[in-house]
Amino acid sequence: MIKRLLPFFFLMAITACRQNDSRREEQSSQVTTTAWEPPATGTTIAEYKERVTEDNLNDKYFRVTVKTTDYSREGAYRLKLEYGYNINETDIQLPEWHKGTFLKPVLKKGAGQYHCLLGFDAGDGKFRELYLINAEGGDIRLKQTKGYYKAEK
Image (cartoon, rainbow, N blue to C red):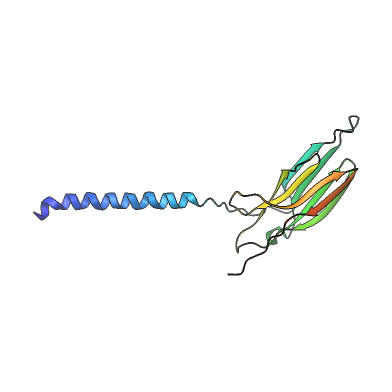
Protein backbone atom coordinates (compact mmCIF):
# COMPACT_ATOMS: atom_id res chain seq x y z
CA MET A 1 0.00 0.00 0.00
CA ILE A 2 2.81 2.45 0.90
CA LYS A 3 4.59 1.67 -2.38
CA ARG A 4 1.47 2.68 -4.32
CA LEU A 5 1.08 5.99 -2.46
CA LEU A 6 4.76 6.98 -2.62
CA PRO A 7 4.60 8.34 -6.24
CA PHE A 8 1.44 10.26 -5.33
CA PHE A 9 3.17 11.98 -2.36
CA PHE A 10 6.21 12.70 -4.54
CA LEU A 11 4.06 14.46 -7.17
CA MET A 12 2.26 16.48 -4.48
CA ALA A 13 5.58 17.64 -3.01
CA ILE A 14 6.89 18.76 -6.42
CA THR A 15 3.65 20.61 -7.17
CA ALA A 16 3.75 22.39 -3.80
CA CYS A 17 7.36 23.49 -4.39
CA ARG A 18 6.48 24.89 -7.82
CA GLN A 19 3.56 26.86 -6.37
CA ASN A 20 5.81 28.36 -3.68
CA ASP A 21 8.39 29.32 -6.32
CA SER A 22 5.73 31.03 -8.46
CA ARG A 23 4.44 32.92 -5.41
CA ARG A 24 7.97 34.12 -4.64
CA GLU A 25 8.40 35.26 -8.25
CA GLU A 26 5.10 37.17 -8.06
CA GLN A 27 6.13 38.86 -4.81
CA SER A 28 9.58 39.79 -6.12
CA SER A 29 8.13 41.17 -9.36
CA GLN A 30 5.79 43.47 -7.41
CA VAL A 31 8.74 45.32 -5.85
CA THR A 32 10.26 47.37 -8.67
CA THR A 33 13.18 49.20 -7.15
CA THR A 34 16.39 49.71 -9.02
CA ALA A 35 19.65 50.49 -7.32
CA TRP A 36 21.43 53.54 -8.70
CA GLU A 37 24.76 54.98 -7.74
CA PRO A 38 26.20 58.34 -8.79
CA PRO A 39 28.88 58.00 -11.49
CA ALA A 40 32.28 59.75 -11.49
CA THR A 41 32.57 63.45 -10.64
CA GLY A 42 31.67 65.78 -13.52
CA THR A 43 29.36 63.32 -15.28
CA THR A 44 26.14 64.76 -16.68
CA ILE A 45 23.20 63.01 -15.01
CA ALA A 46 20.29 64.85 -16.60
CA GLU A 47 19.80 67.61 -19.17
CA TYR A 48 16.77 69.51 -20.42
CA LYS A 49 16.92 72.02 -23.26
CA GLU A 50 14.45 74.10 -25.19
CA ARG A 51 15.31 76.44 -28.06
CA VAL A 52 14.69 80.15 -27.44
CA THR A 53 12.09 80.96 -30.07
CA GLU A 54 12.19 84.76 -29.70
CA ASP A 55 15.70 84.91 -31.22
CA ASN A 56 15.75 83.39 -34.73
CA LEU A 57 19.13 84.92 -35.58
CA ASN A 58 21.20 83.23 -32.85
CA ASP A 59 21.33 79.64 -31.65
CA LYS A 60 20.15 80.21 -28.05
CA TYR A 61 18.69 77.70 -25.61
CA PHE A 62 17.02 77.46 -22.24
CA ARG A 63 19.07 74.60 -20.78
CA VAL A 64 19.30 72.91 -17.38
CA THR A 65 22.10 70.44 -16.68
CA VAL A 66 22.73 68.34 -13.56
CA LYS A 67 26.28 67.06 -12.97
CA THR A 68 27.85 64.96 -10.25
CA THR A 69 30.24 66.38 -7.67
CA ASP A 70 32.67 64.83 -5.20
CA TYR A 71 29.76 64.76 -2.74
CA SER A 72 27.03 63.25 -4.93
CA ARG A 73 26.95 60.11 -2.79
CA GLU A 74 25.61 62.42 -0.03
CA GLY A 75 23.07 63.99 -2.41
CA ALA A 76 25.00 67.11 -3.59
CA TYR A 77 24.93 67.95 -7.31
CA ARG A 78 26.03 70.86 -9.53
CA LEU A 79 23.23 72.59 -11.42
CA LYS A 80 23.98 74.65 -14.54
CA LEU A 81 21.24 77.02 -15.70
CA GLU A 82 21.31 78.73 -19.10
CA TYR A 83 19.04 81.11 -20.95
CA GLY A 84 20.82 82.36 -24.05
CA TYR A 85 24.02 84.01 -22.85
CA ASN A 86 22.85 84.18 -19.24
CA ILE A 87 24.66 81.24 -17.61
CA ASN A 88 24.63 80.44 -13.88
CA GLU A 89 25.80 77.53 -11.75
CA THR A 90 24.76 76.53 -8.25
CA ASP A 91 24.89 73.52 -5.97
CA ILE A 92 21.77 71.64 -4.93
CA GLN A 93 21.23 69.15 -2.14
CA LEU A 94 18.74 66.30 -2.49
CA PRO A 95 16.97 65.21 0.72
CA GLU A 96 18.12 62.31 2.89
CA TRP A 97 16.37 59.05 2.09
CA HIS A 98 16.50 55.50 3.37
CA LYS A 99 19.95 54.20 4.24
CA GLY A 100 21.77 52.83 1.20
CA THR A 101 19.46 54.55 -1.30
CA PHE A 102 21.00 57.06 -3.70
CA LEU A 103 18.50 59.51 -5.17
CA LYS A 104 18.81 60.06 -8.91
CA PRO A 105 18.17 63.64 -10.12
CA VAL A 106 15.51 63.80 -12.86
CA LEU A 107 14.47 66.72 -15.11
CA LYS A 108 11.01 67.04 -16.68
CA LYS A 109 9.25 69.64 -18.82
CA GLY A 110 7.25 72.12 -16.77
CA ALA A 111 3.82 73.60 -17.46
CA GLY A 112 4.90 76.60 -19.54
CA GLN A 113 7.48 77.71 -22.03
CA TYR A 114 11.00 77.72 -20.54
CA HIS A 115 9.78 75.83 -17.47
CA CYS A 116 11.56 72.76 -16.14
CA LEU A 117 10.97 70.62 -13.04
CA LEU A 118 13.90 69.17 -11.13
CA GLY A 119 13.10 66.23 -8.92
CA PHE A 120 14.43 62.82 -8.07
CA ASP A 121 13.76 59.11 -8.34
CA ALA A 122 14.38 56.97 -5.25
CA GLY A 123 14.62 53.79 -7.33
CA ASP A 124 10.90 53.06 -7.53
CA GLY A 125 10.28 54.86 -10.84
CA LYS A 126 8.29 57.71 -9.22
CA PHE A 127 9.16 61.32 -10.00
CA ARG A 128 9.20 63.50 -6.89
CA GLU A 129 9.26 67.20 -7.69
CA LEU A 130 11.67 69.39 -5.76
CA TYR A 131 12.43 72.57 -7.77
CA LEU A 132 10.86 74.68 -10.52
CA ILE A 133 13.30 76.31 -12.93
CA ASN A 134 12.00 78.91 -15.36
CA ALA A 135 13.16 81.83 -17.47
CA GLU A 136 11.20 85.08 -17.77
CA GLY A 137 12.43 88.28 -19.40
CA GLY A 138 15.97 86.92 -19.68
CA ASP A 139 16.17 86.03 -15.97
CA ILE A 140 16.50 82.46 -14.73
CA ARG A 141 14.68 81.54 -11.54
CA LEU A 142 15.16 78.50 -9.31
CA LYS A 143 12.43 77.95 -6.74
CA GLN A 144 12.00 75.06 -4.34
CA THR A 145 8.41 73.83 -4.66
CA LYS A 146 8.32 70.85 -2.30
CA GLY A 147 10.22 69.50 0.67
CA TYR A 148 10.87 65.96 1.86
CA TYR A 149 12.10 64.74 5.20
CA LYS A 150 13.28 61.45 6.59
CA ALA A 151 10.57 59.90 8.77
CA GLU A 152 11.77 58.49 12.08
CA LYS A 153 10.77 54.91 12.75
